[in-house]
Image (cartoon, rainbow, N blue to C red; front, side, top):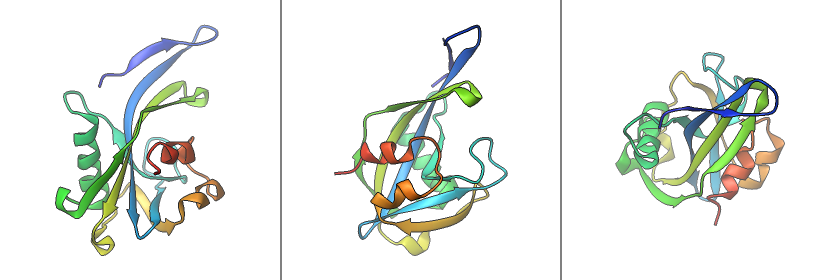
Length: 148
């Protein structure tokens, strides 16, 4: 999905970007990932597996691609639990409006997770603990979109 420019107060504009955020779960816990200093935004913050939705692909296909790239998980390693309604997240600090497409996947074998350069740490937490971490904007609300 292409980015769009949206008007906001004043003369500047917000750039709209569509992204996926994937939550991995196993035995009632979810994995969160600490973003490395090499990523473009939100360095040193906790997040799910996420990425821009590339032109010509669907959010679901992009979610699977991100899982493969960032966690080393193929389609056979996960099972879709829920796809949530998109969430708009405005970050005026970077003049951006994110449209987050959330997904929740059960991980069949957590030992198969292999982080790439985008993350430096992974933790398994109870979902209600998300609010205790410095996360990307509105991660707990994104989780609520896929929580049962």
